Structures are given as structure tokens and as C-alpha cells.
Image 1 (tube, helix red, strand yellow):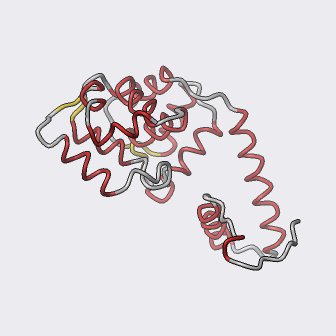
Image 2 (image 1 turned 45 degrees about the vertical axis):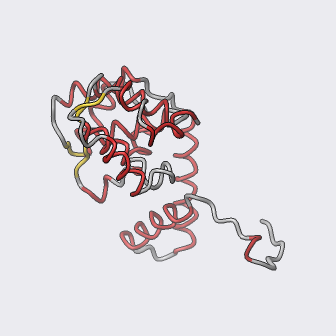
Length: 200
């Protein structure tokens, strides 16, 4: 353990996911009310580390697997967590990957799982750039989408997955598409408000 003294605020670097990890741990402590908090914490974080390692070892889902989940959802907007897990398992998506998306989407708190949000988050986790996510949206959800749905999907990146997707960014995107009922990849790729993000 590093015990080097901290002399100024500039020496403090807070990991990006610290708040989420501590929030999830705090919920478990409140839910389970353990008698030995230190022992409970040690086991909790050991399990979390093991789950994290197994999700890193799990194969990245393919767009074909995501399409299969979408097809089997049969037009449903939301499903229970158990139903979504069954569809994911049928498509060959690893349980550790499923759990990671459930946590990222905060679906446990919501009770129901939005099919579009779940699939979008899976897609975003498998892509290495905003351009890949944008192209993937049209590959997964259809070559032409209602403009509002495209904006909604991009909005799922904010603020945790992409800090540049701000409220203002989404407002600018909506304004750019105000006269468009539907969009395809070529249309969104030509938008000035997305040019910088698509080229990075």
C-alpha cells in the first residue's frame, strides 16, 4: 500500500469509477447489514475483482448476437431482468458481460430493462470510438431510424461513457435534426455538430 504523504490537492487523482464502486458497495452494506463490515468488505471486493476479471476474459459480443437479442425481444420496449438475461444467454452473450451492462445501465434500480438502452450499451462497450458506435447504431437498429430515436440512443452515452456528450451536445444534435423525420448514417455523418467526434 502506498503511504507517501499528500502535500497538495494536485497530488490527488480520483479514479473515474470510484463513486460508482463505492455507491454499489454502500447499497450492499445497507441491504445486508453485515455484523463484520471489514470482513464483508473484503469478500465483496474480492468477488467484484473476480467478476471484473471474468468479464475481461469474456468474448466481446458481436453485432449478430445483438441483432439476435433484438429480434427475440420481438418489439418489446422493456423486459424484466430475467427475460433479458435469458435472451442474452440464448444469443451466447457471457453472463459477466450481461452483468456489466446491467450495472452500467443502472437497470437494477429501474426494475425493468429497456431493450434499446441495453443493446446500445452493449454495442458501445464493444466499440472503440464514437464513429464506430454511430455506425453500429445503424447496423443494429436499422439503416434508417427516426431522428428522435437516434438522439435518444446517443444520449445513453452521457455522462458516464462519454463526458463530451453533454446536455448542450444533445440539444445541438436535436436542433440539427429538427427538420428530419428519419436519419441514416450518411445524414448524421454530414452533420457539423458531429464532425469533430466522428473524426476523432
